[in-house]
Image 1: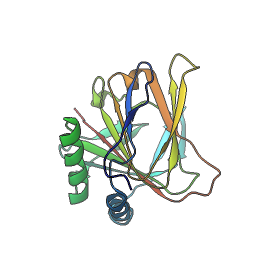
Image 2: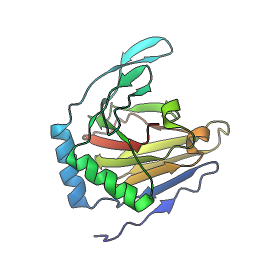
Image 3: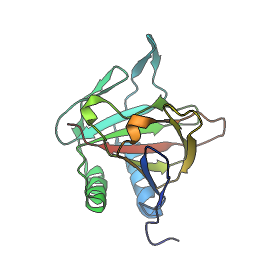
Length: 198
């Protein structure tokens, strides 16, 4: 068992992305996963892509402490107040990385057919060079990255239970990311994405 939080830089050009595989211990991650699966009021919204409307291929929820809404893909979400568990994770992130987060968008991937298509976290509410702290709980899924202008620049990383992927600096300007569908039989994954809504 690893007793400390090792981490490594993905070393991608035009990006500042660091992966912390052991940000939460297995025991912590197990408890949080069970809590969020059972207690979050998950919602299933429709999204509009190229003028067509589809059911979003995952469930979501928004929590925050400043009452500010978050809009993406023509979906506007009003935040619920942080619960004790989210407050605890938020505090740990803020203390370790000296950043402030106001909001957490949660995603529930129910199986391998749930996904998140290519996008950047570059909505105007996030401001310039946003810091996005993405925590994975439950089933491991591959996270794909591609550069917006240099098509040869690609990367993928397996996001593990209890891990943290921290994206900062100019990352969202130059890179897109996705969680693709998989034909493998996989269980549920909860993803917590902390950000600051201005």
